[in-house]
Every structure is written in C-alpha cells, then in structure tokens.
Length: 191
Image 1: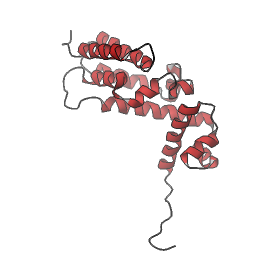
Image 2 (image 1 turned 45 degrees about the vertical axis):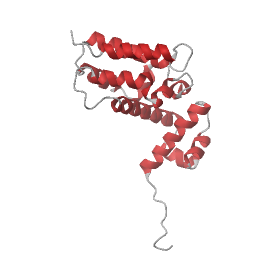
Image 3 (image 1 turned 180 degrees about the vertical axis):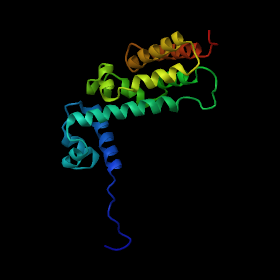
Image 4 (image 1 turned 135 degrees about the vertical axis):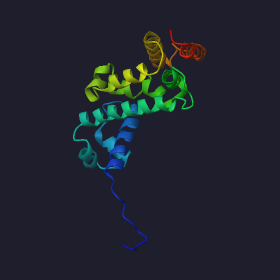
C-alpha cells in the first residue's frame, strides 16, 4: 500500500451513529418490524457489525429512543434565541420547535413518524431508557422565569399541537393562530 492510499479508519462512535441514523430512516419508512439486515445495509455495515454495537433489536431500539431524547433536547435548544434574556426564552424556543420550526420534530411527532413506528405511545418507553428526562425538562421550565401554571399550559398545548401538525385536524391557519397565542403567553410579565 502506498503512502497516499489509506485504509478506512474504523471509528466505533461513527459506526454506531451511522447505524442509529440508518435505523431511524428505515424504521420511519418501513416500520419497527423491518429486519436488522435492512438497517445494516442502509448503514453500510454487515449485520454482524450492527450486532457488535447492538446485540439485540431491543438494544438498538433503546439506543434509538435515547438518540431521539438527545436530539429533541438539541432541537428545542437550537430554537432558543441566545440574545433573549427575558423570562420565557426557553418556553418560547420549545413552542417554536414544536409548532413547526423544527422539521425533525414535526416528522418525529407525525402519525407515521419514528415514535409511532416504534410504538412509543407513552412516556413509559422514554422513562425506561432515560429516567432523568422528566427532571431535566422540569428544571429547564422551572428556571425559565414564568409562572408555573402558565409554563405547563403553554408546554402541553404546544405538545398537543405538535401531534396534530400535518393532519386535517390542524390547518395552517389554526397552527399560525395557536402558535402566536402561545408565544404571546410567554411574553407577558410574571404574575
């Protein structure tokens, strides 16, 4: 082998990420019953390579839910305006992310999205993977400077809207109006 030719460097983290990203795409498109071989093929690894990182389907899907938790948090934080130091900045970012600014969250929460395909129909699935997830969200919302009742009302309304985006139940006009109202609730002075 010449000095200009290099063998591909195997990177455990990169391979693991490739498998998880492939699993997310394939499961979203074909459902949770898709074969591990199909996921491995999409990731560009062998099935035994996939099994090296994830010894079972359950391990793979638990890691997939963990990736969703991490990415969900990152998507929300990406929608928090770093220049906004007023009370409610985090909640505004949450509303923006869940009500249409994040294509990832829109797809994730859709009726045919990854969570639906995995059968993640209750928070028990998330708690099984990351028991600290609720506490992290609660701390972030509690530190946001808005009255607690308002934070919870806005948060859960945004989550309800997110589930309906892309269906006949939430029109573009309804989404626009509801989003504006939720954001307005985060702008008022604490009571």
